[in-house]
Amino acid sequence: MPPDHPSARICLNHIDVRRGAEIVLRDVAVDLKGRGLTALMGVSGIGKSTLLGVIAGLVKPTAGTRQVDGKVAMIFQDPRLLPWQSALDNAGFGLRAAGFSKDEARDKTRLLLERFGLRPADHGKRPSALSGGMRQRVAIARALAIDPGVLLMDEPFTGLDVSLRADLRQLARAIVEERNLTAILVTHDPVEAVMLCDRVMLLAGQPAYIAADVAISPRSGTMVEAYRAASALMRRLEVESGSIVRLA
Image 1 (spheres, rainbow, N blue to C red):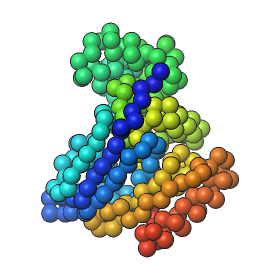
Image 2: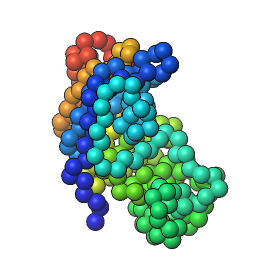
Image 3: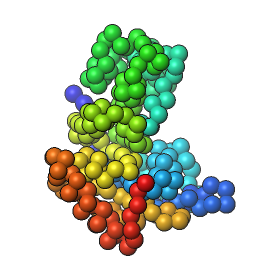
Image 4: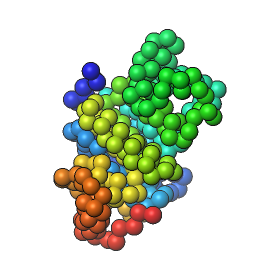
């Protein structure tokens, strides 16, 4: 039975982040009380990864307050696996850091790896012997093994082939629903957003701030619906932000 996280919440108030003399984020407010998947969009370099870092506690804001209830796990574009460890031990890395024994970590992650499409024969392989998609599946298992209430995903599907990207997208959506997670997905793809997410936040400006926040209902079920909904989403983001939205 997947863990339940009824109180998982992300609450940021008046967050500023400086990088040297540059203000990267200015007066950012985020309040995600419920469960579900939120897309975080904006141009490259705007500060999306920095914002995830603040939520995860990896980046210290220069102003404002951060409240995150429950454990936080992150999935990156690069799986960041340890090259000298097996898939099984990479998936259990967070558990080992939390004090679990190697056997306990392996027992807990073995079923996760199988759930995410890695056969038992692949569990003992090192990352160099795994495909890119398999490495990303290990990274997903590693994040979920610690039973987080908040899941942060920083462009985890970028660079994967089309069919694999579609599979992992649906897997991510299923994970959020099964585990009742509060989740954020950084993406540049409005089609991905309307097919997977419950709402979209747009980061824009210099310094960056939350320029738009729109709900997606219902999510698109087919590609034709998704392309139509993505066009409508971009128009809504432009109306809310008061500017032309570019995501590349």
